[in-house]
Amino acid sequence: MAVSPASLPQGYYNAALDLLDRNLAEGRADKLAVIDDRGSYTYGEVTARANRFANALTALGIEREQRILLCLLDSVDFPAAFLGAMKAGVIPVCVNTLLTAHDYDYMLEDTSAKALIVSSALLPVFEPILDKHRDTLKHVVVSGADAGGHESMDALLAQASDSHEPARTKEDDFAFWLYSSGSTGRPKAAVHLHAHPMRTADAFAKPILGIREDDVVFSAAKLFFAYGLGNNLTFPFSVGATAVLMAERPTPEACFKRLLDHRATVFYGVPTLFGLMLANPEMPAGGALNLRICTSAGEALPADLYRRWKDATGVEVLDGIGSTEMLHVFITNRPDDVRPGSSGTPVPGYEARLIGDDGQEVGPGEIGELQINGPTCCVMYWRQREKSRQTFMGPWTRTGDKYMVSEDGTYTYCGRTDDMMKVSGQYVSPFEVEAALITHDAVLEAAVVGQKDDERLIKPKAYIVLAPGASSEDMAGALKAHVQSQIAPYKYPRWFEFVDALPKTATGKIQRFKLRAMTDDA
Image 1 (tube, rainbow, N blue to C red):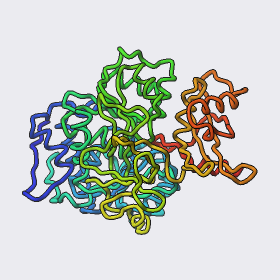
Image 2: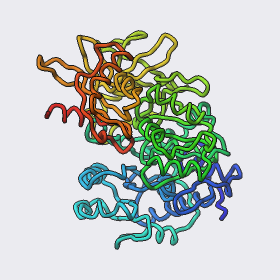
Image 3: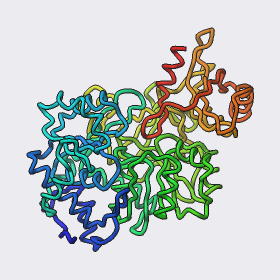
Image 4: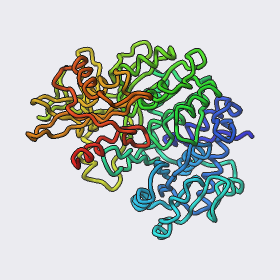
């Protein structure tokens, strides 16, 4: 199937047009673009599918700048719907596929979405709430074999033309929304512009990852997540690489299968997953993998975890920090210049500063709140004016993360602002304590929060997931001594609670606010 590349008059810009039709114009119509659980698709086929979706939206009466809610598992239908909507000037709102009906009820109300595009496996979660939104929600379109009495995405695509004249949008037009992960409470919709996706590719994927046309990329982070959207859509489409999409949850076994079956060269993970993969008996030997580079984000990657992955695979992990608000990574390590235990240095085009409790910038070695200035900051949080005012301050965006910077400009994560605690009048980073704990062979995962002692003073408490085969018997004393041997002795946890799992968002971030609530209730 050949689709002619479209174009816009000078002065206009459409992100979907840039990501799709550039590959046709550069002769990649027959190049493999996407591999999912059902098959594989060329750039020509994905472009045709996106065009059909754009035309289907128009046929449904959905107009430019109206919102549609995308609750889709990772398959070719995600890029088709996401890019097709933007091509038509419609705003796709990507939502977490692991939420409850209560969460989706809030998001349908918040967005006033005109259509819901949902995977058939996720439809039952929405069914109880659909009638509440009939005043605004005019269409339910189902991706998958069973549409459940609603409109079928496959049927709509079959009826639509594969040629589409893109909306005359500009770089500063609203393009898509992403909800924050909710690691600290109710999620917020970050409003992004058409200019933003390609800017992340030009700043991070091309100069730092060195992504190229012959890469096969696989992201454990899903497409609804800002990190995953860049990893498995923007970045590969920006150079004509191949993206491997997986609908199921990213268990170690599922990830091993994709990495091996498709000979992936770039793997995007999160710290929790790297740890689980290393602990899994099916972990492939380094020589079995075809990887040339890995990245990690979502939470800071402990130095010990980095070293164990590098020893096992021979492949570097570029740890970095990004956010939904900034769309992707803005501070990162570099190939052949990894500083284990740090987030690295700012991505070109981004500036960072650390602000102390007094509102003044702090110097090297001091802890401050990280603020970022860069070209991909979202415009606002939708319908949350006060939170927008608190977060977006002129060119600077408050991240809510505490960091230290060294004399050479390397940034080291200390914890979320809400997670930091003062012990004996000094800041203690929960991440530093957690990083010390996981160097013990018996510890698979650890999370540290503050708890008041008998004198109402805050001290660290650790929640521990033990490694397979390890016993909690006499472990508390051993872990106390271990931490004291690794970091300043006053930072050691006074209490230990051994648990089967830690509460996390769908993107792998530990929800320490839930642990604090458990601690307060104890």
